[in-house]
Length: 72
Image 1 (cartoon, rainbow, N blue to C red):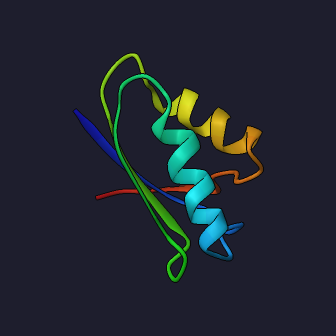
Image 2 (cartoon, rainbow, N blue to C red):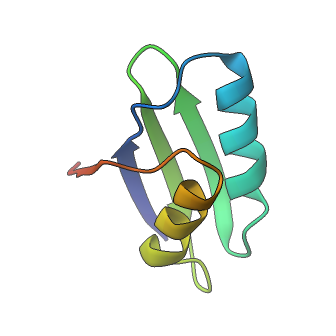
């Protein structure tokens, strides 16, 4: 299991959080998605077949592109 945290500057409201958590949560292999409006960060825990590439591509597709990976 892998956990990544991305900076997503486009998070502005509860709708943004709901959209990110719902859309990313539907990817196969996603265990959890937690978006935070105050910090503009999204923490995602996943296993294969999900991957960082697939997650970042989906975030960009739904207009919430990840601008950075935060090392934990």
